Image (tube, rainbow, N blue to C red; front, side, top):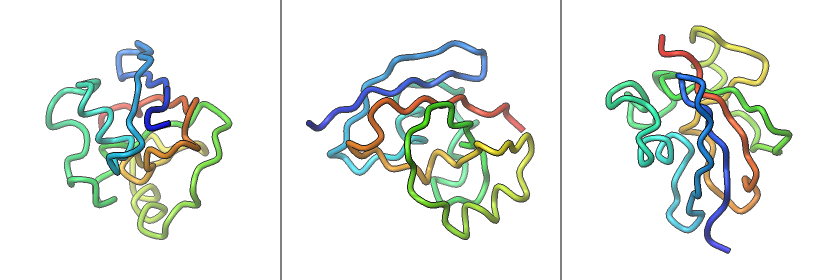
Length: 109
């Protein structure tokens, strides 16, 4: 299986059911950009290097995610609107294990 189903709630509160490929080494931030679920220039500003928090999202589902890296943790410690379930979309790789993932994009800071 090379595609997974995920739900992404955009910054306007609209939930989108999207299909994400797992065979293209994409991360969640790139999926959001490819579906144009956030205005151009408002997500993935740093290019996915965990340096800007523009792709911060709230993980709604119980999907088990990889452990947070030191860089991701450091960036979230400086970001706005951080919650206990905050993660950076650029750090969540689209793998078969992410099937059923549900996230909400954090407000634009």
